[in-house]
Length: 240
Length: 220
Ligand SMILES: Nc1ncnc2c1ncn2[C@@H]1O[C@H](COP(=O)(O)OP(=O)(O)OP(=O)(O)O)[C@@H](O)[C@H]1O
Ligand SMILES: [Mg+2]
Image (cartoon, rainbow over all chains, first blue to last red; front, side, top):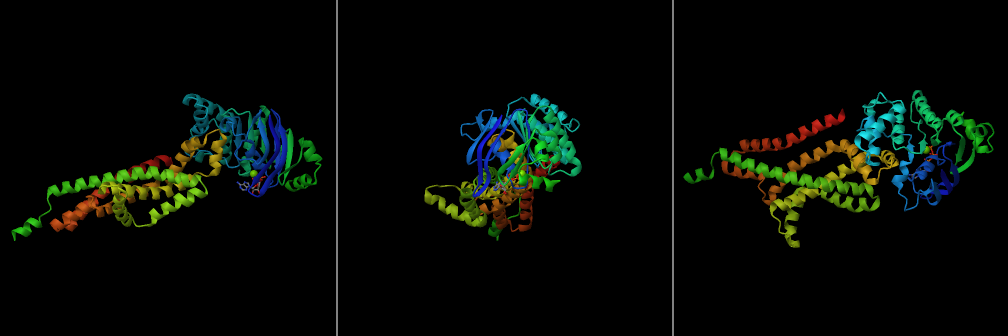
């Protein structure tokens, strides 16, 4: 379980997250929506410790993420993350991209790591691209490569930061399909997304962020059908 | 008459050997300076890119001095300065120290460029997989950054080979100094300079050829 308690985040003077309280249970799929600059990405970075926090606490399976004594590199193995920009390692083939972290972080042997990589690449539908370099892959394929790379660490949680926003429209579907598949397999997921269809169909709950505050959270039917907050209704009216 | 014959004598085969030995010294001081300067320069470049204010202000400024003051002035200054602080360095050691620092100043810029070429998002992706700071540097920043700035580094290395000629002012008998000695004796500047040029080319060519091969391999 991910527990976020009274989380405040500042960038200098800029107050980006203003007291977030949020729990995400094992197996849950949470979609986070909201306009640009509302702090959605920052929230994900705070969850896996890529950003520091100024107040409050983030706890993953009982471990406080921002505690000095926490082994953050170990904790992150359990929190896969996929970014808007896929960031494939350009000098490595698909297989090597995925095998790198299992080998150097988890200390797996080369053959073990490659076996894991092959399994995950097949899982996301890249079984025929094992020895290709990222430069020979489409954006959608590179994003699925990034998903496979995160999955290879066998995380229990996956954080998606607008995984489809940088993709050409015709490539969005294949990545959403992969995310949907993970959700169906029972992965715990927090998905920052602008894909309202995905948020509505796949998530258990949807959270709406507005200027650093979590204005509203609830099941998709309620958020999309009967939002309590004026801001939420306005936002949804605009994105449709 | 016979005196001047003894003083001005023809270019001989043994002179070629003399030039060859000098070329060996050029190669030696270049190799030492490029190696030491590259290692130092990478450390400096990393320090500048890793620390926001302190690194840029201190290391960055000092290196700027070494990059902007003509090498020949640095050589003469340090050669005369070392004995004052009790270091009695021979021309080779003095030259190698100055040339190494000069190389480090140039390589630091290149290294910094390489690190910045990798970019924050890529590094965050690496860290999100559980890589430590050093693993990220070793397995992500290093290979990607190296490929990005390798041609620039080769450029620095080739220029250091040529700049090593300036160490001749300290009396280190490398290629240029040897050529001057031979020219004074033989009055055959054309042959001797052509031969010296050929030696410089012979030192540089394998390096640029090898780097081309490497770049081609990376590009595929
Ligand atoms: N490293 C940083 N330094 C300073 N300010 C930052 C930094 N990262 C984000 N911000 C600021 O924090 C605020 C929230 O940014 P964040 O990226 O979390 O928004 P977001 O909801 O993800 O927006 P988007 O939909 O555009 O991705 C923005 O005003 C942004 O400019
Ligand atoms: Mg964002």
